Each structure stands twice: as structure tokens, then as C-alpha cells.
Image (tube, rainbow, N blue to C red; front, top):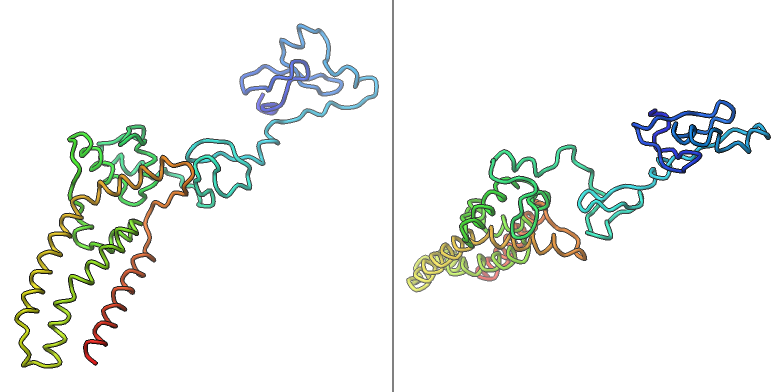
Length: 274
């Protein structure tokens, strides 16, 4: 019956399914459910027999050609839609044949429909993008243990550049500024010694050591709380239907951050030397 799947019965107007038993009028070609044809004992489009016209069935599939479904919330949308009006998902990105949350299943700790902080794991995984399985596992364990921190190694090693990579832009900018300020005593000490090797830089050297220790401590603290802060951001954006999701990663943000830090250091060095 696959030929008439999606069409409507000429008698009851119900849409045929794949399993329906369909009979077709030999005169006009009108399709009927077999039981409809037997009950009436005649073709529902009998008026066409006198004129010799053929029945023109309408397929519901033709109407669906201009429709598509949002991959996140499941709402039916116009085929030309760029953003889902319900969940603000960007529909221009190509669909992945393999849902990204399946990577998380490699770790065996989280299932797609498990919830973390009130959000489904598959939605969090799609938001996070690369390395979603690691984040899901850490978040699930932290939620189970009631803990607010877990060490993030990339955040510890790369600091503000990793925050920018994960689109934690505000946190990344704050820590870029903090890194620049905490390195000031060391930069001043190094440049002053280069310009005048006989200068007394004991105080600056001590200040540089103090700032170095403070910077290391703050970096470790931020790395311990990064996963929790990242989860809070992800949950807030996923739950807010009026906000465009800004998950995934961004290498351009990293390059901009590096360029900004280099430019600031260069300008500082220039003014200290002259």
C-alpha cells in the first residue's frame, strides 16, 4: 500500500497509513479503505464517473515538504526558518548524523535522558560540543557528591585562554586583565634591569614573587570552580528560551585574547624603555 501512504480516503477523509488495506475505484481511481468501500458499496467519487474525470488525490506529504522540525525542541517550523522561535536554536548549522551526546556514552556514567541541574544530558552535551563526555561525567559526579568544585586541567594549564575557548568570555577577559596586572612587577623588574643593570630592584623583585604566588593561587582556585561556573552558564542559556545559545568552542576568541595580551605587554615595554 506504500503508494497511497499519506493520501486521504475518498470516503472518510482519513490519511492512509502503511498498514491500511486500500482499494481503488477502477473507473476514476479514487482510493478507499477497503472497509469504507464495502460499507458504502460504491465509489465515494461517483459524480466523476458521468463526466469521465479522474479522481485527483491530495497527499499530505506534499504539504510537509515546506516544513521541518527543530532538532532541539521538536516544534514544526517553516522550511525557511533560520532560528527556532521556541528555543532560539540556530537552524543554519548542518545536522550531525551522529548526535554529539553519544560521545558521552563512551564514559559509561551518563545516559542521554539523565538530568544534571534540571537539564537533560543530551542538551548539555550538544551545548558543550567537544569533550562533552568528560564534562558530563564530572558534572554528574559533582552533583551526586554535592560538591561545587572539580579540577579542570586545561583551565589550570591555559587559564584565561581556555575560558575564552569555551566561550566563557567575561571570565576570560577578567583573568586576562588579572594576568597582565600580576605580571607587571616582573616586567618592570626585567626591563629596568635591562636598561640599568646597577639599579636596586630588591623591592620590585619581592613584589614580583608575591604577585607570582597570588597569581598561581588564583589560577588554581579558578580551575577548581571552572566546571561549576561553566555548568551554570550552560544551564542558564539552555533554560532561557529567549536567548540564542552560545555553546561550543571558539578559537578566534583565543587568538584575539592572545593578541590583546601581547599588544598590552608591548605597549607597556615601550613606555618603560623610553
